[in-house]
Amino acid sequence: MADLGFAAANGLAFLLCVMFLGYVSLIFVPYFRHRPSTAGDEHQFQWHFLVPCMDEQSVVEKTVQGLLDTFPTAHVWTVDDASEDTTLAILRRLERQDTRVHVVARFRPEARQGKGAALNAGWQAIEEALPAGQPRELVMVSVVDADAVLDADALAMVAGPTFFGDPGVGAVQIQVRVRPDPFRAVDDQPSIPRRQRLLIALQDLEFTGPIAAMQMLRSKTGSVAMGGNGQFTRLSVLNDVADRHGTPWHGALLEDFELGLHVLLAGSRTAYCHDASVVQEGVPRVKALVRQRSRWAQGSMQCLSYLREILRTRHLTAGGTLEIAYFLFSPWVQLVGGVVYATLFSSAAYYAATDPLGVGHWWGGGAWGLVPLFLLFGVSPFLIWAFTYRSRVRPELSFSRTLGLGLVNSLYVYFHQAATWWAFYRVMTARTDWKKTVRYSQHAVDAALDLLFRPPVRPPSQALARLRGSGGPAPSRPRSGTTVAASAAPELSRLRREPVTPPSSITQRDEHALAGLRGASPLSTSAVFTGVHKTRVDALRYGPISPPVSAVQRVPDAVRDSEPITASH
Image (cartoon, rainbow, N blue to C red; front, side, top):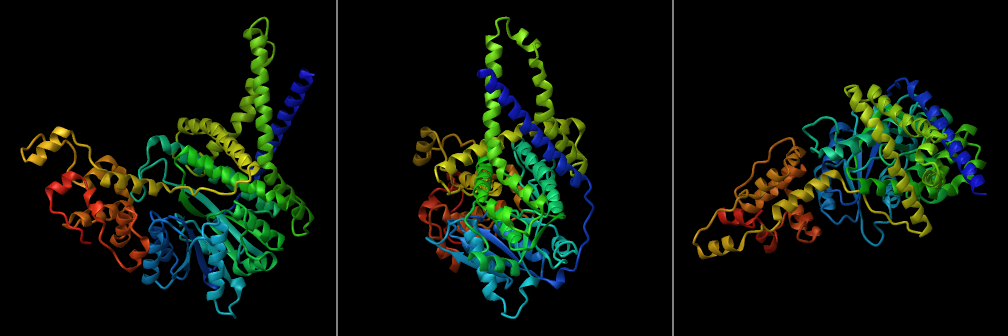
């Protein structure tokens, strides 16, 4: 009986491997046959960017300003979802400065109900702001994250004849790239530790390789999926979905994919534009990455409820139906595969340990055949993607570096396995909450704040000597908060291109030092300064305020001793 079960597990494992390789082969074909798309006239459409924001003070100002500068005819709608930092204050200031910026503020308890709910609030605001007679099919709504940077020709590309130039296309997804650049230093991006560069490189490889190839296959089958960043949809299509279901976006944690399903089920087509891209921040930490991917996996599991409607609709081709079904079943197949492969590994270890003639006999008796099978199914596909990444995206990579990237890529897939099991646990425990992925730039700001305001530790003898005025050995540390931040985290200085001239007062100098690290204006930085000490953010809407006494007291002692303290801003 045990031998029969082992044989069944072997057969199932082989079937899963063949399915995986078959799918990889299918997505390779359109990927390598891709030809550049033709741009169109972007001025025939009206463009509205929809930027959901929740605690995005470290990135949102640069993103909004970048959209305004790059696309002067577009409007930017920002939805603040009850941010607990200074995001709303920053957005209000930008709204006052430019009439193309619109702020939709959400507050508890209605806020923080998921990204989809925030997007619905933005969609409703856009719809209400437009004149009644304006053709909605010529109004394009683009969802971009608060850390997004779009190509300058992105609007022209999605306006092309194979995209919105075709009246039958209701939504377009563009390519996604990841920053910071893991292979070279750039002035306008933070320097990242070497141990985190590899993880970001693997994410960029994933988005520009397998994910892009999947979208190209979907272009052939008519089942292109929408992503959470860089998606464009006709307002008329969003209204059509809302007429059918109440709102365009719904409750799945994978709300972007869910929207794409609704667009297809409503009779519109979706398309993928590989020749325009949006760049987003990568996730530099393993735990945060697994948490993010578990949210995606859980959202995919939730969307399985649409399978019956997908099978019944006449708006999808047979190929599109099969492709969507494969995607919806993927997390469940991963769960089954995890159990099967773990069972086979345990069985192999058991047979090796209990072979009466030893491990050598077990190995020579045919177990060695596991190695080529593992290399064929578990390593070679990921090596191929690494060399594809080199040929299509990163030609400057050396052969040895690409080989190493491919080998690590074969291990990277196990993060997805862990994320799927985490998602399964959340489904079984009926948990639908989620934690927002912290921006890399926010880690930099937090580090700077910690360095600027951390109370210094001085030996008791030195502190007593200073109080008595009897001198004592000088502390062997920098003598200003800005020097502390710069010496301990030099990579943060590249977050802003232009230097910031520090004023004379202590609080202003520390404030402007933070502005140089964050790329923010003194007003928004004042909010950071005071926000650290739990001062009400609402007061910041009316201008900068003085920090509480505790904030001044926490300025490093060396600074306080060397210059007069002032609390003015």
